[in-house]
Image (cartoon, rainbow, N blue to C red; front, side):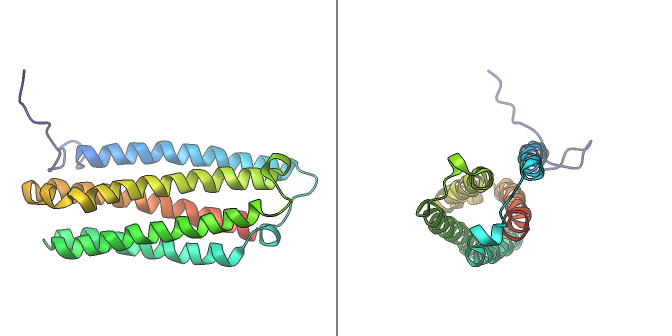
Length: 199
Protein backbone atom coordinates (compact mmCIF):
# COMPACT_ATOMS: atom_id res chain seq x y z
CA UNK A 1 0.00 0.00 0.00
CA UNK A 2 1.37 3.38 -1.00
CA UNK A 3 1.95 6.03 1.63
CA UNK A 4 2.32 8.82 -0.91
CA UNK A 5 0.71 12.06 0.20
CA UNK A 6 -1.88 13.83 -1.91
CA UNK A 7 -0.20 16.80 -3.55
CA UNK A 8 -1.39 20.41 -3.68
CA UNK A 9 -3.19 20.41 -0.34
CA UNK A 10 -1.03 23.18 1.06
CA UNK A 11 0.54 24.58 -2.09
CA UNK A 12 -1.26 25.67 -5.27
CA UNK A 13 -1.24 23.47 -8.35
CA UNK A 14 1.11 24.75 -11.08
CA UNK A 15 -1.55 24.36 -13.76
CA UNK A 16 -4.36 26.30 -12.04
CA UNK A 17 -2.65 28.31 -9.33
CA UNK A 18 -5.19 26.90 -6.84
CA UNK A 19 -5.03 24.22 -4.18
CA UNK A 20 -7.10 21.07 -4.63
CA UNK A 21 -9.42 22.20 -1.86
CA UNK A 22 -10.08 25.56 -3.49
CA UNK A 23 -10.82 23.93 -6.86
CA UNK A 24 -13.20 21.59 -5.06
CA UNK A 25 -15.06 24.36 -3.24
CA UNK A 26 -15.44 26.42 -6.43
CA UNK A 27 -16.88 23.40 -8.26
CA UNK A 28 -19.24 22.75 -5.36
CA UNK A 29 -20.35 26.39 -5.31
CA UNK A 30 -20.99 26.24 -9.06
CA UNK A 31 -23.41 23.36 -8.45
CA UNK A 32 -25.05 25.36 -5.66
CA UNK A 33 -25.55 28.30 -8.03
CA UNK A 34 -27.41 25.95 -10.38
CA UNK A 35 -29.55 24.63 -7.52
CA UNK A 36 -30.60 28.02 -6.23
CA UNK A 37 -30.86 29.35 -9.79
CA UNK A 38 -33.42 26.66 -10.57
CA UNK A 39 -35.42 27.55 -7.45
CA UNK A 40 -35.32 31.26 -8.23
CA UNK A 41 -36.54 30.40 -11.74
CA UNK A 42 -39.40 28.40 -10.22
CA UNK A 43 -40.28 31.43 -8.11
CA UNK A 44 -40.37 33.68 -11.18
CA UNK A 45 -42.53 31.21 -13.14
CA UNK A 46 -44.96 30.81 -10.25
CA UNK A 47 -45.23 34.55 -9.78
CA UNK A 48 -45.65 35.37 -13.47
CA UNK A 49 -48.21 32.62 -13.94
CA UNK A 50 -50.33 33.55 -10.92
CA UNK A 51 -53.43 35.72 -11.31
CA UNK A 52 -52.69 37.35 -7.97
CA UNK A 53 -49.50 37.32 -5.95
CA UNK A 54 -49.09 38.81 -2.46
CA UNK A 55 -46.44 41.39 -1.74
CA UNK A 56 -43.89 39.88 0.60
CA UNK A 57 -43.92 42.89 2.88
CA UNK A 58 -47.66 42.33 3.46
CA UNK A 59 -47.25 38.68 4.44
CA UNK A 60 -43.77 38.39 5.95
CA UNK A 61 -42.04 40.13 8.84
CA UNK A 62 -39.70 42.50 7.04
CA UNK A 63 -38.06 43.76 10.25
CA UNK A 64 -36.97 40.30 11.38
CA UNK A 65 -35.59 39.68 7.90
CA UNK A 66 -33.72 43.00 8.00
CA UNK A 67 -32.13 42.07 11.32
CA UNK A 68 -31.18 38.70 9.85
CA UNK A 69 -29.59 40.45 6.88
CA UNK A 70 -27.43 42.56 9.20
CA UNK A 71 -26.52 39.43 11.19
CA UNK A 72 -25.38 37.55 8.08
CA UNK A 73 -23.40 40.51 6.72
CA UNK A 74 -21.70 40.78 10.12
CA UNK A 75 -20.91 37.06 10.01
CA UNK A 76 -19.15 37.52 6.67
CA UNK A 77 -16.93 40.16 8.25
CA UNK A 78 -16.09 37.97 11.26
CA UNK A 79 -15.34 35.03 8.94
CA UNK A 80 -12.81 37.13 7.03
CA UNK A 81 -11.29 38.27 10.33
CA UNK A 82 -11.01 34.63 11.45
CA UNK A 83 -9.04 33.79 8.30
CA UNK A 84 -6.94 36.98 8.56
CA UNK A 85 -5.96 36.05 12.13
CA UNK A 86 -4.55 32.76 10.86
CA UNK A 87 -2.57 34.62 8.22
CA UNK A 88 -1.00 36.54 11.13
CA UNK A 89 -0.36 33.24 12.99
CA UNK A 90 -2.75 34.24 15.77
CA UNK A 91 -4.83 31.16 16.55
CA UNK A 92 -6.57 32.54 19.65
CA UNK A 93 -7.85 35.57 17.72
CA UNK A 94 -8.91 33.26 14.90
CA UNK A 95 -10.92 31.11 17.30
CA UNK A 96 -12.63 34.19 18.76
CA UNK A 97 -13.78 35.43 15.35
CA UNK A 98 -14.80 31.94 14.23
CA UNK A 99 -16.90 31.60 17.38
CA UNK A 100 -18.53 34.97 16.61
CA UNK A 101 -19.33 33.75 13.09
CA UNK A 102 -20.88 30.60 14.55
CA UNK A 103 -22.89 32.74 16.99
CA UNK A 104 -24.18 34.90 14.11
CA UNK A 105 -25.34 31.74 12.34
CA UNK A 106 -27.12 30.64 15.52
CA UNK A 107 -28.83 34.03 15.85
CA UNK A 108 -29.88 33.87 12.19
CA UNK A 109 -31.48 30.45 12.62
CA UNK A 110 -33.14 31.54 15.88
CA UNK A 111 -34.73 34.56 14.22
CA UNK A 112 -35.80 32.40 11.28
CA UNK A 113 -37.45 29.96 13.72
CA UNK A 114 -39.42 32.85 15.25
CA UNK A 115 -40.46 33.95 11.78
CA UNK A 116 -41.53 30.43 10.82
CA UNK A 117 -43.55 30.21 14.02
CA UNK A 118 -45.39 33.40 13.10
CA UNK A 119 -46.31 32.00 9.70
CA UNK A 120 -47.63 28.71 11.08
CA UNK A 121 -49.68 30.51 13.73
CA UNK A 122 -51.82 32.14 11.02
CA UNK A 123 -54.38 30.59 8.70
CA UNK A 124 -51.97 30.73 5.74
CA UNK A 125 -50.36 27.38 5.02
CA UNK A 126 -47.90 26.41 2.30
CA UNK A 127 -50.14 23.57 1.11
CA UNK A 128 -52.69 26.08 -0.17
CA UNK A 129 -50.51 29.12 -0.81
CA UNK A 130 -47.91 29.19 -3.62
CA UNK A 131 -46.15 32.21 -2.16
CA UNK A 132 -45.59 30.56 1.21
CA UNK A 133 -44.68 27.26 -0.46
CA UNK A 134 -41.83 28.81 -2.44
CA UNK A 135 -40.90 30.95 0.58
CA UNK A 136 -40.48 27.90 2.79
CA UNK A 137 -38.58 25.97 0.11
CA UNK A 138 -36.13 28.79 -0.59
CA UNK A 139 -35.56 29.92 2.99
CA UNK A 140 -35.64 26.36 4.34
CA UNK A 141 -32.94 25.22 1.93
CA UNK A 142 -30.94 28.32 2.71
CA UNK A 143 -31.32 27.60 6.43
CA UNK A 144 -29.97 24.09 5.89
CA UNK A 145 -26.93 25.62 4.19
CA UNK A 146 -26.42 27.92 7.18
CA UNK A 147 -26.66 24.90 9.48
CA UNK A 148 -24.15 22.99 7.36
CA UNK A 149 -21.65 25.83 7.57
CA UNK A 150 -22.14 26.02 11.33
CA UNK A 151 -21.43 22.28 11.71
CA UNK A 152 -18.11 22.73 9.87
CA UNK A 153 -17.27 25.74 12.06
CA UNK A 154 -18.14 23.79 15.21
CA UNK A 155 -15.76 21.04 14.13
CA UNK A 156 -12.98 23.58 13.70
CA UNK A 157 -13.80 25.22 17.04
CA UNK A 158 -13.57 21.87 18.83
CA UNK A 159 -10.67 20.23 16.99
CA UNK A 160 -8.96 23.06 15.13
CA UNK A 161 -6.02 23.62 17.46
CA UNK A 162 -4.58 20.15 16.81
CA UNK A 163 -4.88 20.69 13.05
CA UNK A 164 -3.36 24.15 13.35
CA UNK A 165 -0.37 22.90 15.35
CA UNK A 166 0.31 19.97 13.02
CA UNK A 167 -0.26 21.66 9.64
CA UNK A 168 -0.99 25.39 9.91
CA UNK A 169 -0.99 26.06 6.16
CA UNK A 170 -3.48 23.27 5.44
CA UNK A 171 -5.72 24.44 8.29
CA UNK A 172 -5.61 28.02 6.99
CA UNK A 173 -6.64 26.77 3.54
CA UNK A 174 -9.56 24.88 5.07
CA UNK A 175 -10.76 28.00 6.86
CA UNK A 176 -10.45 29.99 3.64
CA UNK A 177 -12.58 27.41 1.80
CA UNK A 178 -15.12 27.42 4.62
CA UNK A 179 -15.20 31.20 4.29
CA UNK A 180 -15.91 30.97 0.56
CA UNK A 181 -18.86 28.70 1.30
CA UNK A 182 -20.10 31.01 4.04
CA UNK A 183 -19.89 34.07 1.79
CA UNK A 184 -21.92 32.20 -0.83
CA UNK A 185 -24.59 31.43 1.77
CA UNK A 186 -24.67 35.12 2.73
CA UNK A 187 -24.89 36.15 -0.92
CA UNK A 188 -27.88 33.87 -1.48
CA UNK A 189 -29.65 35.62 1.40
CA UNK A 190 -28.83 39.02 -0.11
CA UNK A 191 -30.87 37.86 -3.14
CA UNK A 192 -33.62 36.17 -1.09
CA UNK A 193 -34.29 39.20 1.09
CA UNK A 194 -35.41 41.65 -1.61
CA UNK A 195 -37.04 39.00 -3.84
CA UNK A 196 -39.22 37.53 -1.08
CA UNK A 197 -39.68 40.43 1.33
CA UNK A 198 -39.59 43.62 -0.74
CA UNK A 199 -40.83 42.92 -4.29
